Amino acid sequence: MEQITLKILSFKPGILYILFFLFITSSPLAIAQKQSRGTNASPKPNQDSLNEAKQRITDSTHAAQRSYMDSVKTVREHILDSTKTARVESVDSIKKERKHFADSLASIHKYKNSRHYIDSVNKSRQTKIKTAQKLRKTSVDSMQAARKKMLEQTLAVRKTFADSVHKIQKRRSDSLAIIRKYKQSKRYSDSVSIARHVRMDSLHVMRKKFNDSLFKVRKIQRDSITKVRKHSLDSVKLVRTKHIDSIKAVRKARADSLAKIKADKERQLKAAQLAREKKMSMALDLKIKQKREKWSNETMLKKRWIPPPEPDAKYGDAL
Image (cartoon, rainbow, N blue to C red; front, side, top):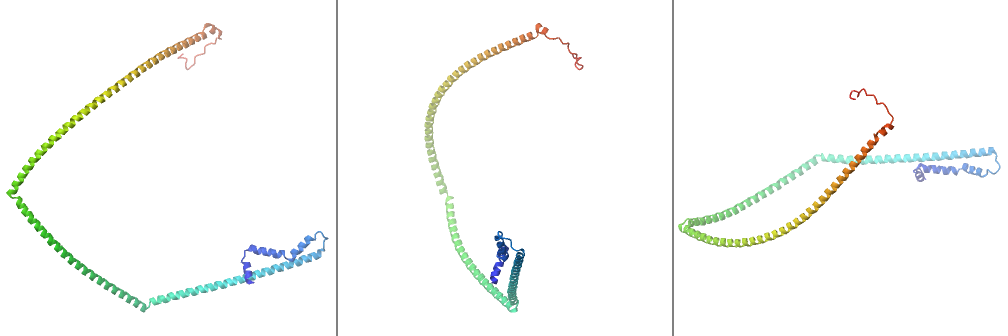
């Protein structure tokens, strides 16, 4: 029952209002009002009995509302008490866990600050340092031994290589000394001079033969090039002459046509100028004639006579 009541109270307030409305509509007051609406067509009952019934229904409704509010209040108090107890239990459990964690940290800290732990840590550090030093010393000793062995081997190889190089250099210097001595002898110098003279003579002969053949080939090429160039120049000259003659003919025909057009234009300009002058002279004659007719005696006599205006003060002297 308590679980059902908690579920009902956990709903939104709108659902509680709906339940309260259903409770009121199912009350005896609502039933009596419906019956009174249905019996409106019947004759009117006694007013006192109706008031008593209404009072009784109102009292029962108030009693139901009070009982409903009391039940809601008790349920809410129960929910608050259960929530408080749950909070207190959760806070106590959190405190216990924190205390256990703090106690464990304190015990670890106490153990780390103890003499036994410090001595064991120092001892392990010293053993690590000693082993590292021993390993470093053994590695350095082995490295030095390997370097010494490598150096001895390198020196031995270098000594053998230097000895072989010295032997080769001595042999080469001996052979060069022998060659130098032979080259400085009179026999070698005479043979060299004779070989040079022979070579120079053969070179002169070969060079003369090559130059003669080269001059001959060049002369043949020059003659052929001259012949081809003369033929090409003659053909170009002939083509140019034909082209110039055609251009001259075209230019002459064009000049004749332009001269004819120019003469026609000049003749047309002269005719237009004569017509313009004639038109202007006729217009001038017509204008003079109109003025003469306007200022003739007959026209002036027909006009009314008006005295001349007085001279202006500004322009009187000038007039």
